[in-house]
Length: 209
Image 1 (cartoon, rainbow, N blue to C red):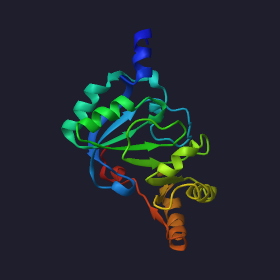
Image 2 (image 1 turned 120 degrees about the vertical axis):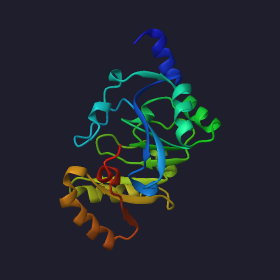
Image 3 (image 1 turned 90 degrees about the vertical axis):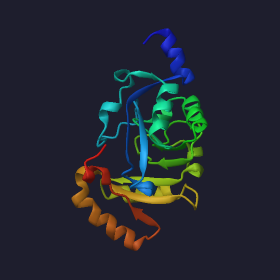
């Protein structure tokens, strides 16, 4: 990376984009709706079960001009999902500002481990034990999506749910490789704790991005 590129990256004029694509949202409150995904490279939270580990190293992904990315996204759909990696590693002010100018609603999927930036309409907070959220993001979370890999994750989920606002929607989602084992546990848990809902990675069943 050149010095000029590094400056533009810090300013948010360039961002490491792993991929961007038009698809159907597969998880959480907006499951089944059309959305344009912008997946940014870079993450140091380090979940061992992460299904996009190729996103972790930002240097592997091309730096793209945010004006071009925003224009491409807005041509396809007015619902934009910023994901990663960990998108809050980067300055999102310019990207989200341009998307708003183009009439877009902006969702983000984040662990919350980095400070918030940009204009965001819907925040999916998915805390990880390896990099806990910044304290101020909890009150802004629109939905809390907790990934369940083992029984202790139910306790972690309750700890995190105690920190979000009363209006935040609560989701439990199995780690994909353990879904046959975990979803029966999630079902039992929700029947006893109906403030929670189940989230399923429907895009994987539909075989879409």
